[in-house]
Image 1 (tube, one colour):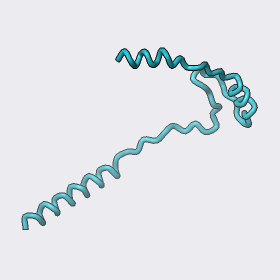
Image 2 (tube, rainbow, N blue to C red; image 1 turned 90 degrees about the vertical axis):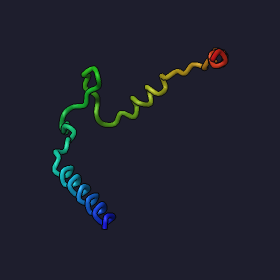
Image 3 (cartoon, rainbow, N blue to C red; image 1 turned 180 degrees about the vertical axis):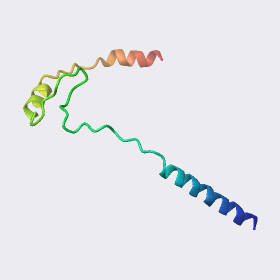
Image 4 (tube, one colour; image 1 turned 60 degrees about the horizontal axis):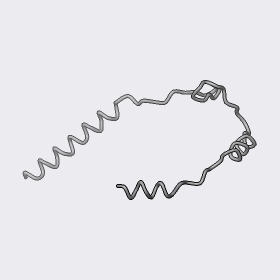
Length: 78
């Protein structure tokens, strides 16, 4: 009998929490439909096909060779 009371109590608490959470207000993200896209500086971004611009930016990226000797010496000093 004692076990049944605990189970009924747990189910009742879960039902109460479920009802309370279902009535809580839902936070929604602001609607930005129709507004022009802007970057962090406030510059209006182009919309449409920007594949050429992206490819040009990718070609302008330069990657330097990592200095593994300094990394190894830093790790060895630990």
